[in-house]
Length: 303
Image (cartoon, rainbow, N blue to C red):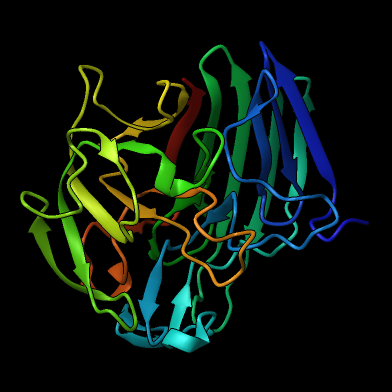
């Protein structure tokens, strides 16, 4: 048994992908042999949340504590150095295989009530390869009897081509970013990107810019989708797109890490339903009624 559990591979129209049992993680994605995400080996423990599904919240909950339904809840501090609860509750659990074909994998997980999150969710994630690339769809059903706070996001690290993040160009149509505290990366205020180093509305090289920020005010195409691209000098690379109405935030992180092999090796692009610490701020926080279903999807495409 591999550290990430069973491995489910798919192939279609030049794309190949591998999804794992643990965390319903996207371990590999390539097009015509060219990697589109920073993956990891089957025998490795997944590093830095690469490719994980984040639910029932993305990003951070300050001190792991929040009030909901008249009760104070305390989540495990999964980011102890910053005293935060990080990236939800399903990134390290085994998901159950529900469907599998040559170009499709569907996994499910039942999140039962527990200390800190006493709510019942039935989660399903599907990965489908097509000419459009890899489309991921995450659904959450409130299978309990009480309203449940909810948010979600994916956590892929996009790879444009050879080199590191510093060598690539970012195209990100976002008008605003969330200022955060330098020590704990918790929200301070939403600020226009105009005149800052965080403005990538006109594509330009990332260089040595450090990014670990949530963006909003997302630009959309005629179909209502936000499209961000990470490109090499010759114009090839990778695009990620999503419906901005359902995912109005995106966390972008340059993967600054102490490990040389991981440091700035991919650009995390995480479309989110809500910003960091939404369980406390309530900003764009979803509240699922009993029996209510929420769905979010995103697509990664070779350029």
